[in-house]
Amino acid sequence: SQISEAIARRERGENCADFLFVFDAQHNGAAIGFALLTGKNGANGLASHLEIRMFGVTRSQRQKGFGRSMLQSILDATPGHKVEASCLPASVVMARMLTNAG
Image (cartoon, rainbow, N blue to C red; front, side, top):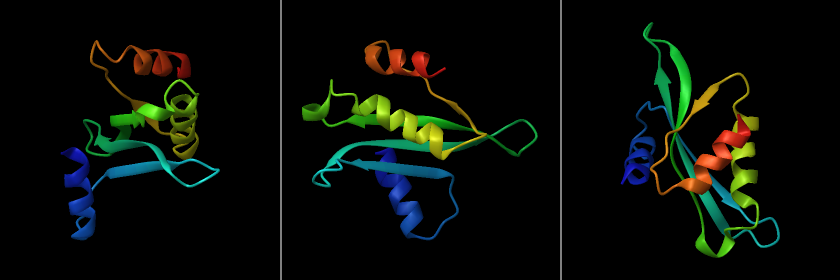
C-alpha cells in the first residue's frame, strides 16, 4: 500500500516527500484516523504543493466531526502551502469537506 511504501522509505532513511499524519483521540490516545500527504514539484522543479493521497477516519469515529478537525489540523500545519486532493465519486463526504475548507 502507499502507506507501507512511505513508512519503508522513511525507515531506510531515504529522502522522500511523504508525510503521514496519525490522529489520536485526546481522551484515550486511540487512533481515530490518518492522512497521507505527498509533496509535489511544479514545472520549475521546486516544491509547489502538497497532495492528500489518502485520508481516513476509523469507522466507529465517523459522523463526529473528527474528519473536519483532522483536515483543519493539516491545513494549520502547512501554512503557505497549496494543498490539493481528488476524490472518487463514492467519497461524497470527503469532497464536501474539501469544498467547505476552500
